[in-house]
Length: 532
Image 1 (spheres, rainbow, N blue to C red):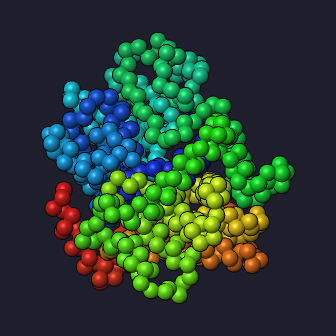
Image 2 (spheres, rainbow, N blue to C red):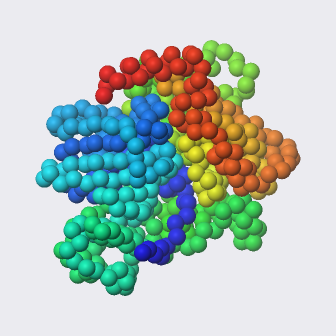
């Protein structure tokens, strides 16, 4: 039995520009870290043992270690969120505390998602919990199962669970539902062996409204992981296509950016000043992500296999006159910087792990060459966020689901739209730039090579930045994109889902099939095994 009082839809700070995190992948580092954190909060006491089960046929089995999956999972299980700098030293922390951990690759029966992960945690009292979740892209997660029972949630609320494992007390589900006034949603699941009640509240963890109905049950509280907590007061989704967005702009007399601000106000129930202030904070973090690594005191997390190239590109620009031109050259410099992992330098996804930095690389390069203001940058980020929520409404923009069109493609579309708006493009030109940039990437595989010097990902990141600048100019020249942006997203989704699994972030196909890649993968896994 279930009821949903408040329908969730994508918003800027949960789905598009989130989570702010330590360097890694949004779906392979931050997502499983958040799931582990939810498991830790469900345990309700200090953890004494960690077991992580990963599907032997899933995405993590192919890429394990490349995107710091293990560090994210262990950090979350220990009670850390993805922005915590202790993520990089979590294994040493656990070993010093005498907390054993293990990773097991087997079959996860509770979920068929390619990014499913199962945590089995033991507390200091001997208490155990199991929690299964899916990392669905961009750091977003969904709960699947807790202690053997179905459980729903995406981390946008406090989740209260009450379990009667021995069926000692008979309870009427309708009576249960009638007692839940004030909560966002409820789910009731029962089996021969027990009853699991799930209650979601959007505002806080105050349980004073819970009735005596729960007395005698085992209870758990799962804490939220998203910055925007869903409220019963949230408004309806203002737009899910660029066509609707343009129509709202015309009817209200507001700019596209102001309509985007209104979208986030409705989605979050935040005041306008809070929505805008948070975007300035996002811009500050993106600037740090794309510029900080050039400072002498930064510790780059380089390995024999990482292949970071930002410093080399910077030296090349200092000593050569590139044929590319100033804006493209600078955009490549900052895009390379965005994907360079540095200790304590947080990254902003959008939608892929480094996507916010790649977007900002384009805007920052244009600002550097043409003198755009910080206010104009923030306006462009609102436009890019609107592109992002359209994508998230219509697909899961992640390599595991639709290939690199869901990552570099959407990122490039966001950058192209934001740049075109910043250059005073019309709404039609802004949409055309986004659509053309996305169309180029449809059908791209997601095939990161473990140990492959960040290839082919780095090449596609550079392409995303350069395409955004190119198609901004092309759109401003009057070129018709033909496909409305939402239709380009739908086609990217349709074609991406038809690609074989080995081309969707499993490191089993595409460029990973090349003999050189196979050789590097073998060397990387031998090297990485020494750290486990």
